[in-house]
Image (cartoon, rainbow, N blue to C red; front, side, top):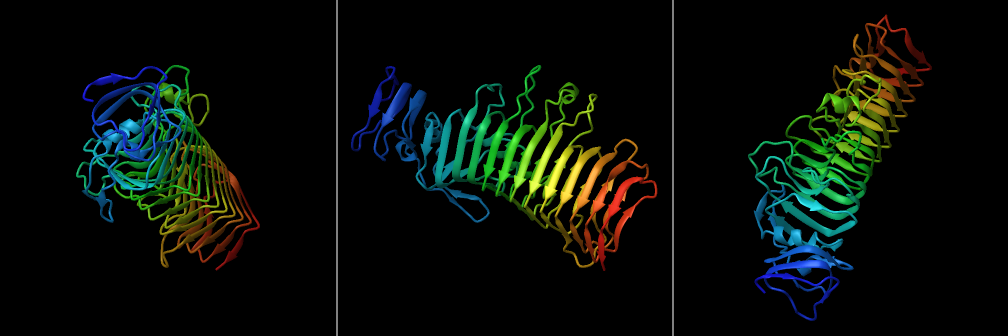
Length: 446
């Protein structure tokens, strides 16, 4: 077959034994495929139209599992599987035979009601473009509506950070531009020239919220990425559970996880169109990132007195040689976390911040001799911080101060209660003008 063939509506393609189609363009019309686990579409087949199968196996599409990479993710050799990927993505329920696959092209668009089980495969991708991603949910070119109910699981993405000389921030492993009810589980995304995972968009439409929403990221690893392990620039209801954010290094901010709204347009900002809200981080691990372990970089309140970063919850997580920088937000809680740092443990400054709770955390400076502060909150005449509560924490080995509220205008309110300070140069410091901070039942062990 070397021509375009349109299959009649509702037809079934049933392949028996070693039957296969060798070449040409095949246009499905709600076409169902039934076959054993054999090649049925040669690698030079182009599929178009609508297709379905109970399970679409990668072997059907003549994927070549011959990619070789070195320990830094650098491409050595392999056959291009880009056309095969475009073909299989026309189906809903995909199962890959375990292998190592190379893709010369990228920006593979996913559609609603899709399950991709990678079968513990490795997907090595390469692109010379400055702004692209390997897999995209929601098209940044305007096709927004109806992207929902997607599951990605059991595969590793390796970008081309190691071999590319092109500097960029935008080549991400997975982009969730727009969509809802999305689950990522047991994935690894590393060596990308942007982020391992990017969530957000800059799309504007009057009075319509285009925020990605209800996203669960479970037992995923984001390692050795160029800009961030993961970024959220616009989203509502994102859960990270049991994830690792490690070894980010390349271009600032270089955080393990960066929650930072796009501030593109003052009208959008005033209407909270770029909000990052209701984000939960549970049982996660942050280590050896060149920037912060967790960066929450909000903005000042808009004219209506609203923040666009709200409701950030971090629980039972470990920051190994990492720290937290958070500002310009309302309602952030960090509970039962271990923060082991080479510098400061927590910093709030720059933009006004309200309703922060740091509770039952261990905050330790790992440098034996240092001049750092465990928790620093700094106000200015433009930026005040209200209801900052630090309670039931253990703060250890900060050479300058355990806690420093740098407040020269009486611009910070809060409570510091039931904390234990170990081997800190000075345990706590506040400026004399701070009138709204309560200190109670703290213990000092020098």
